[in-house]
Length: 295
Image (cartoon, rainbow, N blue to C red; front, side, top):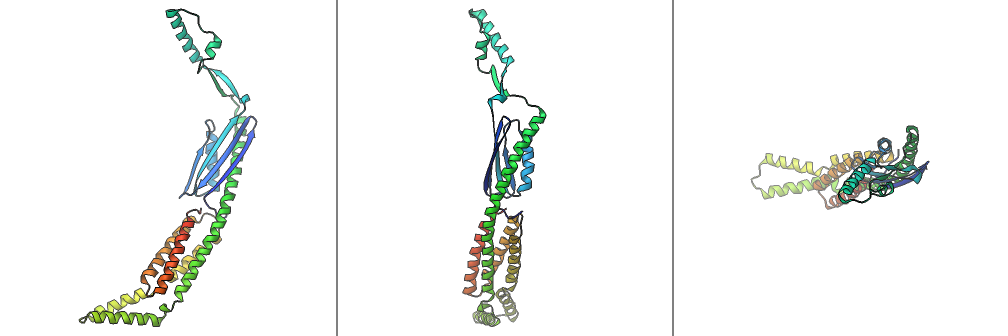
């Protein structure tokens, strides 16, 4: 299974004897798989089989599935509601006894609402099973069409995501190569900050000074965050090179990207690194936005 998006539409139609059917499938974003199936009365067995079938094709997305059925006149026959006829005739006799007149005949009774109803002609179980199998074959065709559409869009989104991950990697390299990260630059920065601390506190405790220097040194070191970014970039590239549902795992990596980038910006000791970090944050936000439509 290749990478898929979560949006798409598919339709299939067909006919079995006197029954025509149409399937329509609409898929949009969703945290999990939400199948909302609507079928006409009498097709409950089709609904259960349809749910099982679609679960094999899709893992995420809100998918609305509707089955429309139309039948030729030959499969609908009139049924007489004998209970309604009896009630109407009894009421007519009661009125005749009170008011006189002529009792209604069969034609008049049949013209009254609720006396004659149109219903589906009963079919044997074997014919019904064949009809349902034909309808489910049509659903499978629609499911494959929807999957192809989702895969096509998923491939396009995956290409955008790959470019964004590569951009994050390039920005990482730019930060790593920044002159502000050289030992000399870090040493000069620390020295200036220590001198500032000493100048602002004439009675500064020596032990406290060592503690402050240690804190400043830790803040100046971005290597841990940069190393983790390399690991996350590699993981994202591997997921995008594979197949199957990867949206949730990529979303987790996007959160990790964001966490490391925020830390880099907060620890940065130069405008250059901060600016590059903010550029990276923008790419990460775009990356997460694209992921919302990935299965």
